Length: 86
Image (cartoon, rainbow, N blue to C red):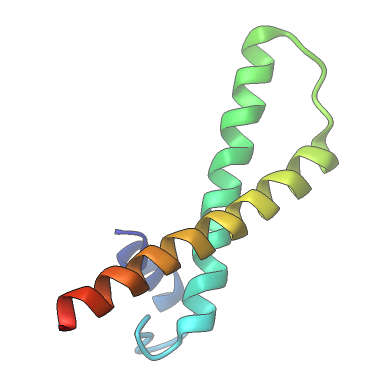
């Protein structure tokens, strides 16, 4: 599902974008999407709880977690892709 979302977003920037042809761009864009989602979840939860929120630190942490998460998702896709080809 993230791959389809990445194709939709990147299709606006690159004509005839195919995620399978550009795996590095796909990987980075998925990481940024996951990181931004985590950032906004943290932002809204801190606003609701009324606690202090460090904008720059939270953005850095969420983008790192997002890139780590997308590497994990890519590893799972790779493992199950190899198993389904056998």
